Amino acid sequence: DAKTTQPPSMDCAEGRAANLPCNHSTISGNEYVYWYRQIHSQGPQYIIHGLKNNETNEMASLIITEDRKSSTLILPHATLRDTAVYYCIAKPSGNTGKLIFGQGTTLQVKP
Amino acid sequence: DGGITQSPKYLFRKEGQNVTLSCEQNLNHDAMYWYRQDPGQGLRLIYYSQIVNDFQKGDIAEGYSVSREKKESFPLTVTSAQKNPTAFYLCASSTQVGGTEAFFGQGTRLTVV
Image 1 (cartoon, one colour):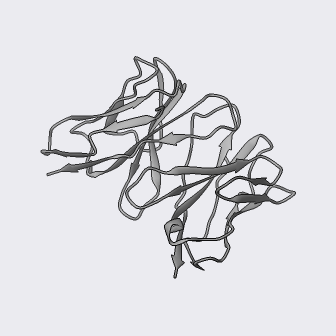
Image 2 (cartoon, chains in turn yellow, cyan; image 1 turned 45 degrees about the vertical axis):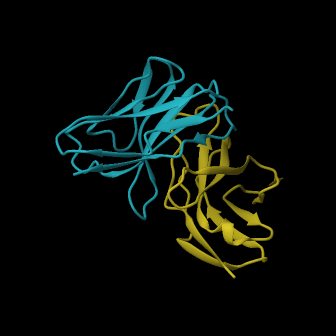
């Protein structure tokens, strides 16, 4: 399973875009990149996932580099409610046996 | 509404007692997971199950046991052998098909005194 590395913390001004990076240099061809977030004392919440192409949904955009060794989660207009720990995970395709979380990035959105 | 339910939200036990945490899902998911989270830390995988009557140890299985007799249910027992059981426990489920999201319960905060 590919390991991921993320910066431990980031700040972002309210209303600005938050760009959260993730390195997954050992990702294999059939592993998806997933992003979850965890607001304090709650269960993690799914945000978005992708394999090769960039993805966008109502919550965020996911940009995956062409070599798939890194990705960036973009929250286009961060609000105070986006303050959370964000986890980047590389998950094996077709085998949901091990969903491994790292330490994540604590995003602090400031007014 | 479909979802994954953990109960209770808060649980207190005396040291040396076994305690079972409940996790139920009505999403028809094949795979289920248990994680432990300590203050300021990430999630660590305790056990996971890909199908009924089968489960695998995660990274920190010692002192824990699970069963998967029904697709909907994946209870976790914290035994007296677990040295530091006080923690936040999270259950999750997902389908077997690759490229799908996992759904998490709201967690059970276990305090052993």
